[in-house]
Length: 190
Image (cartoon, rainbow, N blue to C red):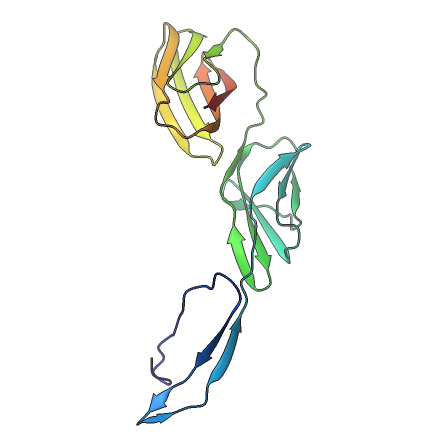
C-alpha cells in the first residue's frame, strides 16, 4: 500500500505479542523501518451467575458496558445485580484499548415449578417427554447462549415429545406455556 493514497494496511492479530517493521519503497528508494509493537490483549468476557448477580470473568477490565435485551444498563463494574429482572444479558469489556463482547446469557426470573408437569428422561440424549400438559401449548427450548433450539405450538392431550438427538451436551431451559401459565424446567443433554 502506498503512503499518501489513503489506503489502509492491516495484518492479522498476533497470537502473542509481536514487533512489525514497516518500510516503503518509492522510485527504488526504501525508507527507514518504522517499528510497530503489537501486544495481544486477552479478555475473558464469559458471564457467570452467582448469588443473584451476573459477573464477568474478566475483572481487570478498564470499563464494563452491560446490556439487557439489547438496551444499555446503567452499570459499569464487572458485576451486575439482577434485581429479579429476567432477559438476555450481554457485556462489553474494554481493556487496554481493546474490547470484547460476551455471548448472550439468558436469565429467567421464573422459578422452576415443582407442579405436576414432568420432563423426562432428564438427563436425556435422544427423545424428551413432557407429561401433564393439557390442551393447547407453546413449547420453547433455549440454550444457555440464549439461542432458541425449539419453538412449537400444538395440542398436547397430556404429553409432548421432541428429539434432542443432535443437540450439544449441556444445560437447556424448557418453557411450556398453557392455560395462561408458564412452567420453566431445566433439561440436561448428555
